[in-house]
Image (cartoon, rainbow, N blue to C red; front, side):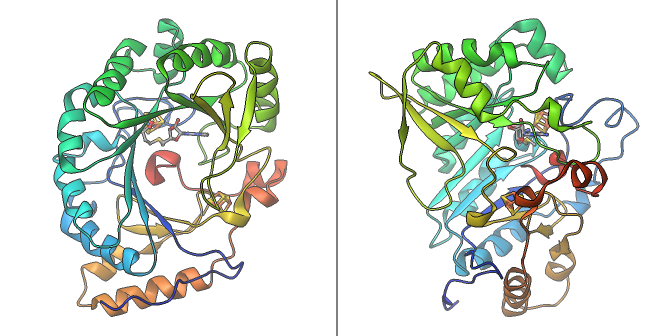
Amino acid sequence: MIRVTVITDKLGRPLQDLRISVIDRCNFRCTYCMPKEIFGRDFVFMPREQLLSFEEIERLAAIFIDLGVKKIRLTGGEPLLRRDLPVLIEKLMSIEGLEDIGLTTNGSLLGHMAEKLKKAGLKRVNVSLDALDENLFKSINDSGVGPDRVLKGIQKAKEVGLEVKVNMVVKKGMNDKEVVPMAKYFKEQGITLRYIEFMDVGQSNGWDFSSVVTKKEIFEQLSQHFDMVPVDPDYIGEVAKRYQYVGSRTEVGFITSVSESFCSTCTRARIAADGKMYTCLFAENGFDFKALLRSDKSDVEVRNEIIKIWNNRTDRYSDERTEESARTKKKIEMSYIGG
Ligand code: SAM
Ligand code: SF4
Ligand code: SF4
């Protein structure tokens, strides 16, 4: 394929990153993401044939890379539940032009999988962990998994040479007491910890502004224990605001989707497990690429469709969020689109 010039949306933002959700299922039921009252035993997940196959993902990814995507992140649901995931990673890594591939996981299966993932070519993994306190963590993931299993997964990932970052969603009254213990633990381990502001994704997590712990509040807590200096972003559009602990090389970061939105530099497209493309985490509707891939459309036709969608993109939900839009706007679920 011939590389076209970088495509931009209506606000001048280039298409540079692609997040692919490989599965909508998860072995956790985090109360802020897949609460059991909604994602219970009767919940109907996608049947296997609705998921994009590895061949379809590879074909679509190659077209996106040809259009300027440099980084791919695999997510879910829980991506490590997707059978043979390392095979997909190997396929993606072989596409010319892709610079980086990452994975976001709850870490529960990382101990078993880390070596295979590394061998397949994965370089980086983001592990979600919301508390170190055993009972609290179990009550958040609502699946009986303790933090030890995730910490062992992190340890294994480090041992095999994967770069590890830890993500912690902070929700008022849920785990704000864990902000400092988590910082102390991961500073000691030399692992970057990133605090994520609780967001109003989906329809099922009962979000409101009062449940958000902002970067400012977290920073104030941390400042009582650590000296931190800001670190310049590595590239335009870097999502986390980064700091370094003084006297250490370890960093800590903040993903401030609510208190300091970053839509003006949002270069991310998302593909859900059923092949729908979304141009915003808070979108209501997606574009059905599975249907296109399973029709007789050529790569050029698929690519033209992506260009059309991206050229028309105007999304800036977080910049415009209000109490009213957070409550009333219809949005897709985080476990479906993958964050
Ligand atoms: N299951 C994997 C995991 O937990 O890492 C990947 C998918 S999960 C949807 C991706 C990330 O989204 C996780 O770090 C999770 O904590 C975060 N997340 C889920 N719901 C969220 C919310 N309402 N606000 C902020 N982050 C959220
Ligand atoms: Fe599963 Fe990740 Fe959602 Fe937790 S945050 S329920 S681990 S998809
Ligand atoms: Fe990007 Fe939408 Fe998030 Fe803004 S709200 S940063 S456009 S995903």
